[in-house]
Image (spheres, rainbow, N blue to C red):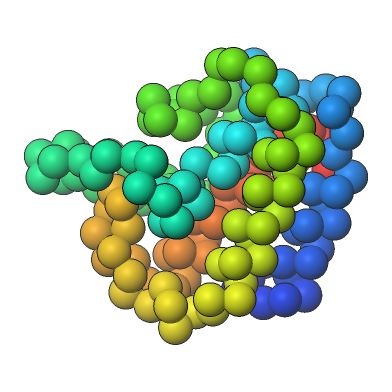
Length: 150
């Protein structure tokens, strides 16, 4: 698995993103490429904005119980797997704006580095290790970049 705190690995992921075009077609799923980019920005929105309401204790417990292992574990996401409502993007998005935001989010995360994320509280899962943060970042991006064949 690539390390999203490593400049070389981040550059490789950004190069893949830069291969996308506004008319790129998905290999599976319903999202268009602009929606996919917006979808990939959601986890960063949890971290870097106040756009998303934190779940209450019960919902957080349930999310942790049923989703944490899939999100931060090494097993790849299955094609067409379900996602949380906040991650569902159905409206048209601006391709270049979403692409630029995603690249900026990746760079910001890499620049903040591992120490910033060590045992940092996740919006939904509580404190995560650096490895869990990395897995969550990379696995999600890799899944959707593969979805668009890059």
